[in-house]
Length: 344
Image 1 (cartoon, rainbow, N blue to C red):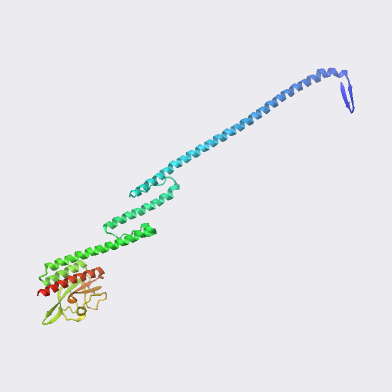
Image 2: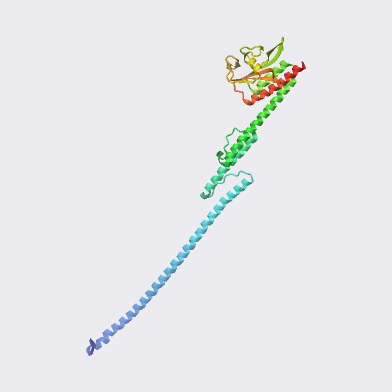
């Protein structure tokens, strides 16, 4: 059968000769094709379903993998954070203990930091610890009365640094003043005992005073002169010397206004010389004879009346506190000699 499609007309041709061919060859082929297409469609469906399953499975795998990675990352961060927390807590605990010891008045030892994040803080605490040790050493030296150590607490900067520097200087001055006061009182007591012991003999008294004075002041030599009246004339007589071996015009008697000693007798004022007149006095030592570096002449008086002189020579300059001490000794000698004269 052949069907011819002509516009507006359908023609059907029937060929009996092909009917058998169609039934025997084409129909089985067609049926095989239908089976093949059916199987193909089934395989396509299976493939599509497989792809859908694989896609869904892949999405699920990625989801679970992402979730696992997220959980792993969260756990890792938690562990790292916990470790850091523990380490930092140890450092914080060290700082807390350090501060607590400071409040208790102790000086703690340096503890090394566990993490670099606290290194600067520990370094600052270590520097502060050094400053506290400086303060501790400073107080120990102050207790011993030693101020010659070079303490620079906080580098003498800031309020505390400047305050400690001022305190150190103030304590040093107070200590020096107290030491000089004790030294003066001890010396005056010693010379008071010497005068009381030898009050009946002026010559022995002059010798003992001169010897004690030279030793106590650690100077090189000295002379003790007393004004006495002989033949109705007052003169300055040398009563005692210590360590003198040669002196120009080593007079036993000096008139008022004569030479340096006579002028001081006349004027009644203390004289302290750092430039000694040529050939005035020599000091003998192991190196031979030498001119002293300083010369001190102190009159001892009573009611402004000069009763005698103390002459002291030294290779070193005589400090001011020793000069004041000699003045006090001269006052005691003036009172003693005045009392001796009144008894006579």
